[in-house]
Image 1 (cartoon, rainbow, N blue to C red):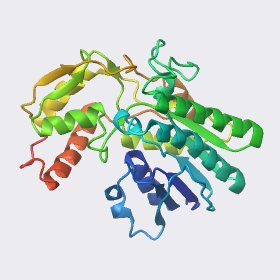
Image 2 (tube, rainbow, N blue to C red):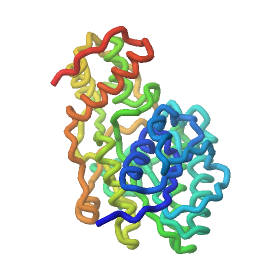
Image 3 (cartoon, helix red, strand yellow):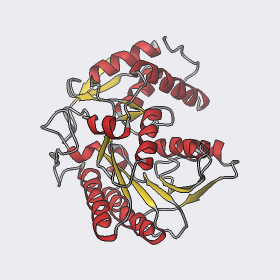
Length: 328
């Protein structure tokens, strides 16, 4: 059946997740307005889309109102790595909170469906494991991560209040660790950090003893979840966990990346940052039963694709002198 073309706004559309989402929506035949202030988003991520007649890029900060006519909104705008969101914590909170107010106001005015890209960080450093959507979290509201964690929690509050009070059609997804091509090379996250360090044969930095766990979901699988959530019936509003339910320790991830890159890097250890979660893994029972969604990409295969992306990026920048062979 032919897809009915929609006018879709993607905030944070030039970022890691946003650029992949724009690609998928374009492939479905929709008309895309990509909005980004390019703080962490990069024009290189969307350069290949600029010639498309149904794609438009706009430099705009979501903390200011936006007046456009659209059918659907994906609100992804917000720096998501500690290095970036702690650079200007006040602005990070404003992006989550005022950005949500502005996008919800737009959705209310034009009667658009709106999806909020929330985060597993709303669970903080969890004492319930794995985390399901009913868990209310363990967040330090005054710590250095609070600008992001509490900002996203407040954004969820706003989404549900706009739904209850103003009847706005909302969707809320909680994203767990996601990786893949177009991750920012300097975002300090474990996957991008380890890959860049390994490709440069630099020491790989482990914080703590490396026993803390994460669950890594490949970007293509996550975008599938976004699309399924937006297409779900209007009584499916979330919050909905989207992530990989298979845990991997940070130390094991480092070993896999060293193996796949053929790196000579050694492991170095540093103190664990304040409020860094010891464990993080989603319960995706709801996504499986309601959306029919679960991730498919195996970690090693996804890492190979991600390594190939960073290998080309660093080679083009002259930061590594010759491509390495990614192990099969």
